[in-house]
Image 1 (cartoon, helix red, strand yellow):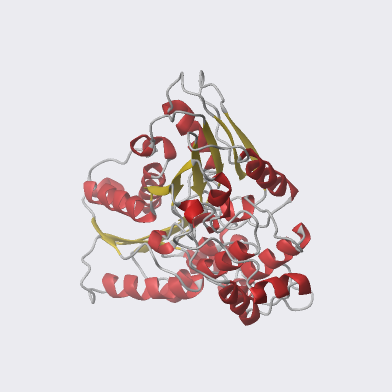
Image 2 (image 1 turned 60 degrees about the vertical axis):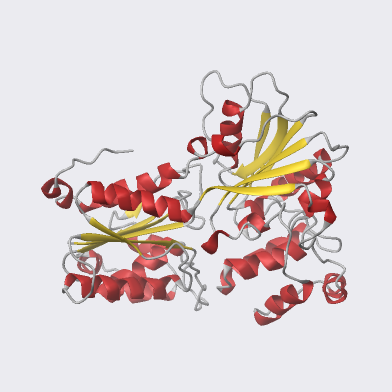
Length: 443
């Protein structure tokens, strides 16, 4: 993490470095090794089985291995996204197997991992402990279709949900009811063992039943809810699966289910904690810092416009925020993919980049406003960047290169817009995930 000089003139002279510093602080706050020890239970009378899924899965597994008593039995299987397994520290023995699979659309490797994880729950007793490590991305990585649904069906439904603009809660309601392992089903399979879930939140409101579609948490949503979401977004199902939803045959374990009586869940890192860490870092540099919310949802470009309005009013002295300041927010916005016209190239980019385009367009070159938006897992959508930067001269520099922001918004092409400007934020996988990070600097 880069060090920033603690003098107002020096850090305000380099807004790009300042914004990147705040992002790095937010990510650092959410790393598993810094947050796991306080929540680890004592070794049980029987054996300890570690199961998990998510973009932070590899780092979470390594944290448990580093902190677990050397002489206590420990084994298990965790699945993470391709290329998201961190380098193994020298001298750290590997007791938990880590495998990789696809995100955001599931693949055969994720299916095989989910099958193995469910098989590992067989034969557990009351004396055993199951330590579940859950983080964002687990919905795709831990894929095990219900009866009557193929992996290809799940992939198609996942793609359609991702393109629909549906909020994460709706997407996960569908995923839970079309799965043999999500929505509390993994915890039910572990009974009668004690189940302790350690989770890193990547969802607005930190609802543990939504993170990775809650494989170890009771589910209050219903088959009827899932059907309604599928109908609203025009997503088709095989007839046999639709009938199972209509009859309630695919219902998930509900609150009060006795199979989940010995389950407990602990949030070890949250978006709000990371935003507060970034705010403290900004204040340490003499900047005012305002945290809007860690629960902001909506269309990414529209959220960008709202942030632009707030930044502009602040820059012009018309808001209650005093300059120089940084305005921070988190949450999970959505991108509704626009239909392509004939011959139009496919757009590249994710939520953070789309936010930045909406912000830049609405700012219209406002002097004194800089911004960074990036996903804390280091990957914005399916590209190799975490997000992008907006500067007061973004529109002017883009225009000089023949780039039209309206055209790029029309085809959801934030990568193609910011890459020629040299304004992509590229970090590589960070090995954690507390969702979107946005920082708007007003000087």
